[in-house]
Image 1 (cartoon, rainbow, N blue to C red):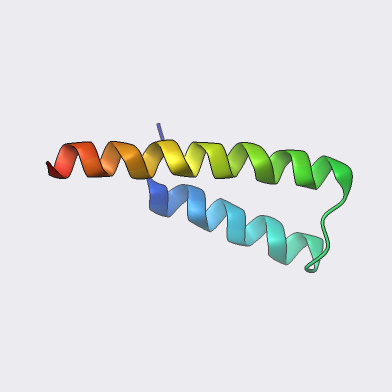
Image 2 (image 1 turned 30 degrees about the vertical axis):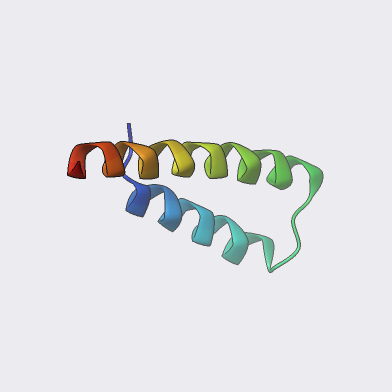
Length: 49
């Protein structure tokens, strides 16, 4: 599993490649990345506890 930082970098790269406007395919990729990022954040919080 990637860290939240790694997933955030992937999200930023996607937006840069898309030029600020996502196609339907890019939107689907973005949604998957957001879910992955949220899971990574939850994992970070659990580890910190």
